[in-house]
Amino acid sequence: MGTDATHQTEELATYIAGALDCPVPHDAVEKTKHHLLDSVAAIISGSRLPAGAVAIPFTRAQGGTEEATVCGADFRTTAINAAMANGMSAHADETDDTHQRGRLHPGATMIPVALAMAERQDRGGEALLRAIALGYDIGVRVNLALGPKFLLDAGHSTHSVGAQFGGTATAAALANLTPLQTQHALSYCAQQASGCPYYIRDKSHVEKAFDFNAMPARNAVSSVVMVEHGFTGVDDPFNSPYGFFDIFTNDPHPDELTHELGERFEILDAHIKKWTVGNPNQTPIESMLALIREHGLAADEVESISVQLPRRRFDVADNSPMPDICMQHLLSVLLIDGTLTFATSHDAERMKDPAVMALRECFTLVINEELDQAHPARPGIVDVTTKDGRQLSHRTNAAPGTPYNPMSRDEVAAKAIDLIEPIIGSAQSNQLIEMVFDIEKLDSLTALRPLLQA
Image 1 (tube, one colour):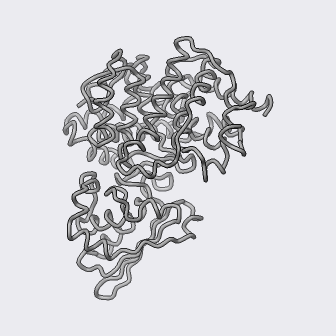
Image 2 (cartoon, helix red, strand yellow):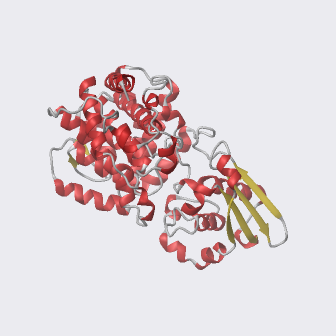
């Protein structure tokens, strides 16, 4: 690759360095607030799950300068340590947001990085929002620049790589790095890029939380803080010889790094999960809920259930040992209870409930390859045969929280309440939600700090 690709790296760094001075459209600002609240709720909730439960004492043991808040805890530490701890909690389960085209979970990295760096640099709410939106833009674009083959069958995890570059952009903007310093921060980011996609074998969701979001958050803040302290690096880490694109892909698309920067805001294409469970379950849950509401369907009326899924979603959801991933379990609980909450969808003991286990025997999951080509992606079809012979069917094309079926402020807030109220209480939860939706009015994040702690 020659000078054109090198110029794109310079253009990318210049954009990152000046991003906090560039207004973000109103719809992107509003969507950023939704993702900020959704991610903060995931962090606070995840602080009590296995990944967060090991990350918080580990982080406390590191000590360090009190620069940033560890959410769900009662202490502060360095921005690097806080970003890692909050990244672990953010993806402690499948509560956090996703970006389908970019193939990453952006919020669980960008928000921990943004909170840590904004607190460290004493930035206000408007800068926080712009830095978060920037991280989504850069994280998605780096993955796209690695080419479609990388996205489809990467030797490295798209979730780790894109999130790390997006987090580095977020941190660099909040640290007010110059364009050249930003190029050097991206170089340190490239050197730390990793993520082997055997994470799917992690049944406790601890290493996966590190791979997807905590490692990228830690590495992103480290890259920026090192450059702040005078570390220098390679001006163009992306291009050959032996550059990032050479090592990571055989079909790079470097134009994607800067394509429509400042015009197309990737946060508008990000997904918030209405249900606090794995992404493959979102549309089947909606289909089953529609059958319950439209036909008064009850668990004791069911003879058999067939769920049609895209091939790429099948293995993830089929009889997973994790309650918030297992489709048969989640739909059984939904049929019995009439709804799903965070508590019921994460209750591992409920997987041994005789009523749930009996209903699971009624399920058949079917691969429907036509659904792999559908748009919007990831539709779900549920077909039910009742004991009295009725044939009921519902197809959900777009789950709530996707760009094709967006959630309202009230819906995002309701999900947040379900996640955080058991940990920080009703009054603090309501104050936190109110402050997030008015975050641009804050000149400093000091006022937000006590609301994030437990």
